[in-house]
Length: 335
Ligand code: ADE
Ligand code: ZN
Image (cartoon, rainbow, N blue to C red):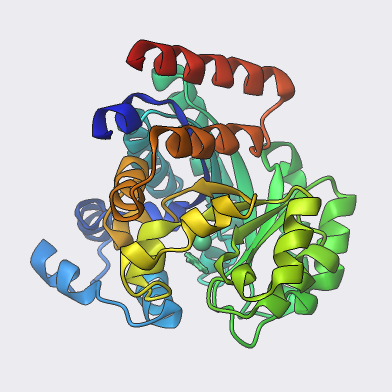
């Protein structure tokens, strides 16, 4: 199974670039930029990465992102992630970035996007990896701040495919961002949103009915509302599920209780993703291995998850056909 998972080409649909910031690179960039960080050794970092909830994690994640200053820093961050994609056989990835995490600290939008874009071009050339960008609004900030971010993004509109919604979910329902999502869609961005990670099923209803998302990030808590499950199936909306994240943020107590198999059994188009791999202990293959083992997923389940990742990506139909052919080639090799 491990070899099968590793050999399959995959698409990643839920990845925060700031969450792929490995401690080694963080030390290097902090030193380069002469910024003090509260850890001296990798061991100290690992000890700090014990989370009791989403907010606990977010506090540490935003602090870590604080050492990113120059275009080169964003380039290095993204190249390190693309290298992991190569190692994990991720051939298509849809990368979220949080502009406000940086613009709030006085870093220009341009610095962030230029660093990411240079890495995207180099990763395509070096490893053949295709990727697109999802600009995520921070939901703990105001809608006005999201509007400002939308405005800053417009000169780079051609580089950005989609808009998302992340950060502290409880108390920040999707409705808070109704107007800015409407405006973003008018600019041509495809809407997605985190919903039902910690927040209730009601937030998932809002994400689909009010923000009109094309995909739901996490969405695990839809299982608490049967009508919602039926609606998600009926509207053919995919969920970007993140197993190791759910475990580390205690949205799942033990992996054997993870809802992924239940979601698949209900006919929901689930996908497997790493979310913030540097913080949650694993990239794509590790996420697949963890759920496969805990839930005793079959080869057919793994194939379904992998095919879902391509079918529900924002790739072109032509790209999708090519990707699915590659998947079928590997399946044939293993039979
Ligand atoms: N930002 C980065 N990771 C996140 C997550 N899992 N949930 C909400 N916001 C995030
Ligand atoms: Zn996320």
